[in-house]
Length: 227
Ligand SMILES: *Cc1c(COP(=O)(O)O)cnc(C)c1O
Image (tube, rainbow, N blue to C red):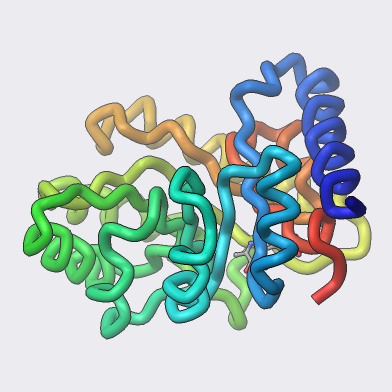
């Protein structure tokens, strides 16, 4: 019950942020980040209307997939090791956390074997935090040029995990920077026009992220409670 209340409040907050920014709420996808949470709670969110779920570990994702309804769309949002790629190909609607050309190459190889195209985002470490995965902004363009030759990987956009801050306003500049960069990349058309997703914003800062142009927010704690 509480989860559904949280879900609806989160959607309202997304709608509020859209209104402030003059955006259409239909342009923002909410991902319910269910990592570490038991399947009963995912089912509760599903019953409340959630269809897009995010997990950060390959094994946990693979365990949960058969336990949930078939129309769930699964997002892999956590760091992916090349040796885990084979297991995950064909299971996700989107891999958010591609942080090297080598990893994209592995996804290409395994997707080709299965005869499918895998949708990915490139993770960008906008704030240049030592502890975080992701390309630095200045590395992204070259990576896009390398990956665009792959025929079984489609770069659908960019993702970032902003710094942990008490005051979400402190991340506004980070989100704005990635949004501007994203628009720049689209203008240059390096991606052949397939970049349409900007995955940014978590429980603590998704409203600011939406105000700054996010098209996909990843909310865990705000829906399922503390981990
Ligand atoms: C856990 C996680 C989230 C959700 O975090 P909350 O603060 O609980 O909303 C979002 N994105 C990534 C990459 C995560 O690992």
